Image (tube, rainbow, N blue to C red; front, side, top):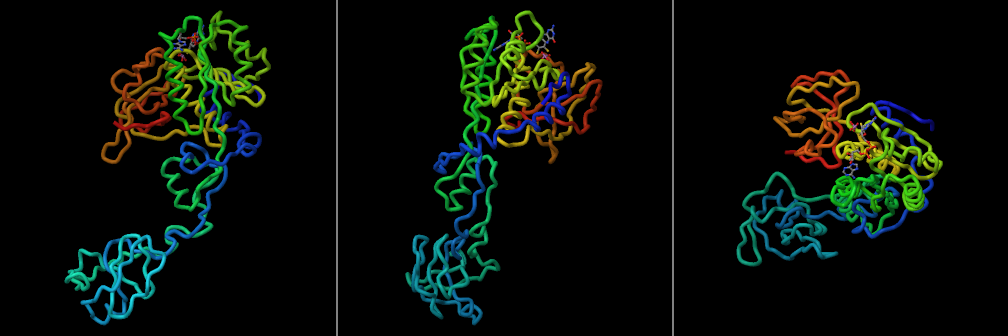
Length: 405
Ligand SMILES: Nc1nc2c(c(=O)[nH]1)N[C@H]1C(S)=C(S)[C@@H](COP(=O)(O)OP(=O)(O)OC[C@H]3O[C@@H](n4cnc5c(N)ncnc54)[C@H](O)[C@@H]3O)O[C@H]1N2
Ligand code: MOO
């Protein structure tokens, strides 16, 4: 893949989509088996198939009494209660003609039984007899296999396992599942002026990237703008990372050594600069099996490029699609007089069923001010020389985590 310089954001994301992902050389080969209750935030390495029908047998959806339909059709309303069907029972004697049994939610429907009537519609006369007050229209019986059938594919390879999917895997009857290894991300903050006191990029990116599915982020100590120190650190990072993410030292200054250092080490630049604000100097290298994503040092530029490009790279390397845009209705006017596409943090809310993007009062982009993010959940895309009126539908990229206010 050759170097692409000074391109647009969509082109960059398309190039990321084309990067051969690690399925062949890591994901498949090193897929591992984990207990289902340790699988959340992992990516499935194989389809999940149902091991049995769900429900496994016809069962009651409510607490009540179970009857034979022909008894009810004959107009009988008063019945002796000759049994109790509890959910833990594997078998129960059949329902005899003229009799009923108490049944609990989730319990199997015994042979002969067809209709369940909830307790609320029945008068209990002592311990052993009941009278039906009313037969509801709906019969609360769940049929065997109505959820899924044995052998059905419930989840596809490549799906991210969230708590909901974990529940589905347990319902499918599995105790263990095969997942892809975590993507190893090595985070390297650079800059001679950066210390523990002023390093916002390190903690912000560590927190963001750790929230992405199936990542394992290793943070390395900050290093100064020194080519030899950079070289040594990058070499050791390459051995332990699938994706190296750096911040700082990637624009045009005298002490911005990352580009030359990585090139000298044999890394091939894939993307060099994007026509965007913030994040113009973003640079991506392919270095043998490792991808290197060099984020600009300005805090807003670093966070934006991490959320859109580093996250897309992480997704790609795990066999998923890059970050995708969505549409929302604009609340106030926005314009861009510059020559680069503007990515403006905006708030999201829903008004009368419509998703709205609210840029707030001040729409100037300042790459060093993280306060622009207060309450925001996505980036509004404003192309060069564009003017968007309130009410226009606009395109946005989502933050790693969307929160509506
Ligand atoms: N002559 C040019 N100068 C600049 C250009 C250009 O094209 N030509 N691009 C500008 C743009 S756009 C950006 S963005 C910045 C990014 O530059 P670098 O990636 O080289 O970043 P640094 O110079 O190392 O740092 C920029 C700024 O951010 C602060 N910073 C860095 N790291 C951290 C950190 N971990 N935590 C908090 N703040 C950090 C740093 O102190 C600087 O103030 O370059 C423009 N210049
Ligand atoms: O592109 Mo830079 O990110 O303007 O500060």
